[in-house]
Image 1 (cartoon, rainbow, N blue to C red):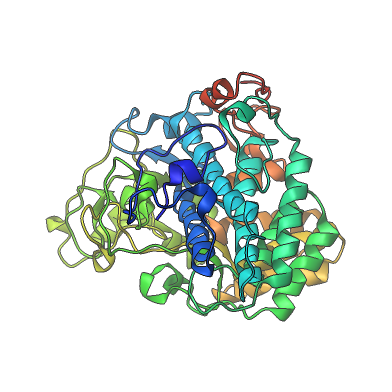
Image 2 (image 1 turned 60 degrees about the horizontal axis):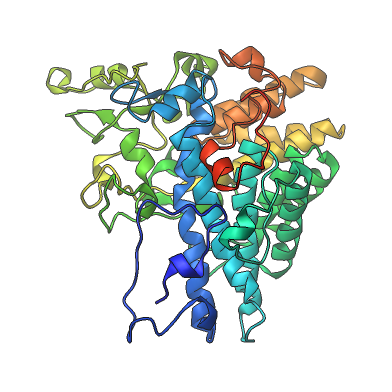
Length: 487
C-alpha cells in the first residue's frame, strides 16, 4: 500500500525490528506525499496507528516487575536482562526493554502525526471520528512516555526529517501533559459511547484516560468531574463474576472501558515481538515446561511475589483469581503425581499471573507462546470507580469515595468499608492492589502516592520515580537532551 519507512519518519531515526511492506501495483505508484486521496486511506492509516498498541505488554510488565508485585523470572538472569535490572532497581540508560518502550510509543505517535498532518487534504463523512480516534491514540502513547520518562520531545501533526531530530529538545512534563489533555478533550467531543467495531476507542475510553491523566497531575477536582461523568453517563458496569473477566470467551463486556485487541489466528516469532497479532504476555507468563490440565506451558516471566499473595484478605476471592499458587493447584487435582513443571533459573516464587496466563482452551497458532487471544484491559470500569474514589478522597467527599470503593468490594462479596481520613486513603491503596494487581498499575500507584521507597527494595527517592531516557536515543538526537536525575 505504501512504504511506511518513507511515510512515517520516526522521531529518533529508530526502526522497528521487522519491516512489513505490502505489494503495490504498479510498484512505487504511491509515496508519502501522494497518499490520503480517499476515505479508505485515512482508515488504513488509523489502523496503522492502532497497530503499535500491541507493544503495551512491555509497559505492563514493568509496572508489575518494578514494584513489589512481581519478579522478572524467565530462563535465567540474562534472559531479557533488562527486566531483571528493573526488578533490582539497577537499570541504567542502556536497557533494551526501556528502549523498546520508547521506540514503539514514538512509532505510534509518528503514525498518528502522519495522519493528522494530512487531515485537511479531503473532506468525507466520518472523518471527525477518525481524527478523534487518532487524537486518543497520540494521547495514549504520550502518556505512556511521560509516566515512564517525564518530559520528552513533543512533536505534533508533522513528521521529522533527520536534520530536525537533532534540533528538537525535551519538552517539560507539564507541556506533554497539556498536549495529552488537549487531544483527549477534542477526542471526547467527537467520539461515540459505542463503536460498531470492537476494540475501537469510545467516548468512555477518552474520559477514562483523561481522568487518569488528571489524577497523575494532581488535578483532583477535575479528575472527579471527568470520572463522575463517565460513571453516570456511560454504558459501563461491573461484571458480576470477577473470575470471568480473564477468559477470552468473556471479553468485550460492560466492564471494558478500553482494551487492546489480540487475535490467535496468526503465528509469530521471537524475532519481532511488535509484529505479533497475538498477546505475547500470557505465553511469557505461562508455566515453564508444564505438563498437566487447564494451563499451557510457557516461559515463567513476571512471577507474583509472596508479598503480593500475602497482601490479600484470605476471604477475598480475587487472590486466587489473580495469583495462581501452582503447587496448591496441582495438589488439588485428581492425579497430582502425573503433573510436571520446571523452575526457571531467573527466579521462582511458586506463583503465576493467573489473569494473563496461557490456558489450553485459548492456545493459538504456532508459536503459541506468542499468539494468545487475551485482550489487555488497559482501563476497566472497576479502575474507573477506584480512580474516582481517589479523586473524591482528595477533594474531601469521603461518602462518595466510600460508595465507589464499596461497589468494587461488593462485586466480590466483601463487606462495606466505613473508614475515613488517613485510614480511608490506606484502604483505597489496598483495594487498588487487590483489584488491579497483575495489570501493570502498581508501580505507578506506589510512586504517585509516595510509598515507593518503603515498599520497593533498592528504590532511590529522587531517581527511580522516572526511568532513564535510552542513551542510544540521546546519541541519535545529537546528544543535546539532558538525562533524568541519577542516571
